[in-house]
Amino acid sequence: MVGPVRPQLVLFGSSIVQLSFSNEGWGATLANLYARKADIFLRGYSGWNSRRALQVLDQIFPKDAPIQPSLVIVYFGGNDSVHPHPSGLGPHVPLPEYIENMRKIALHLKTLSEKTRLIFLSAPPVNEEQIREALSDKLGKPNRTNESCRIYSEACLELCRDLDIKAIDLWTAIQRRDDWLTECFTDGIHLSSEGSKIVVKEITKVLTEAEWEPSLHWKSLPAEFGEDSPYDPVSPDGKATVNVSELCFGIEN
Image 1 (cartoon, one colour):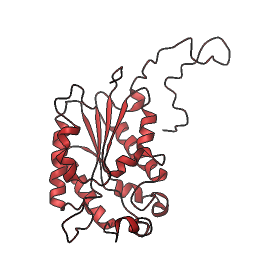
Image 2 (image 1 turned 90 degrees about the horizontal axis):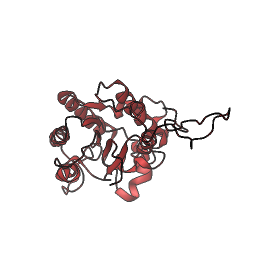
Image 3 (image 1 turned 60 degrees about the vertical axis):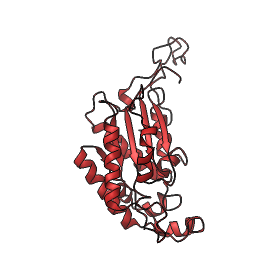
């Protein structure tokens, strides 16, 4: 453990989370925004469904941990939504079980601490043709459809309304972009940099609008060691230094 201790933001989910630090992903963007302000913990597991996540929930989020996360962003649903395989193997989870698994995950996380906040991401859409072209040699005949993603997305959103949890409708948000089919994915499932920009935009909206105390918006958090220093860059007039602790170079958010 290195210090000082900062707020912890945990990204928990399947490959949409695991890969969020690649391809100029949404996780990397969040880590950049929260530099010197909060620590981003990546807990992404490619191929996982809600059933497998529930099995290890206590190991990833122990209730007796001395420091609990300030925010957990959760994504499961896309793998759950794939069509069942005749063998019974594979990631498919029936919709009622998916809803119950997500309920248990949410309730566990809500009890970690009074100030642990949650944002759930619903299943994003998929480009079925791109999946066939990019992944059929690795995963066989495609068994994931945009319609099944919609069903699981809506179930996640309804659950979040029932539990009063902040939720982001990725299935709808991504499809608002006219060229989403060609620009938002790397392989029909996983997000390109353009797809990740939409995720960041939606998370930003939640962080801006949420009436959380304290606020978890990066602009509301103090920069670590943010005091003025004579070792900062010298101002153009040469009479003082410029405090750069709050500057986010190359970031528009």
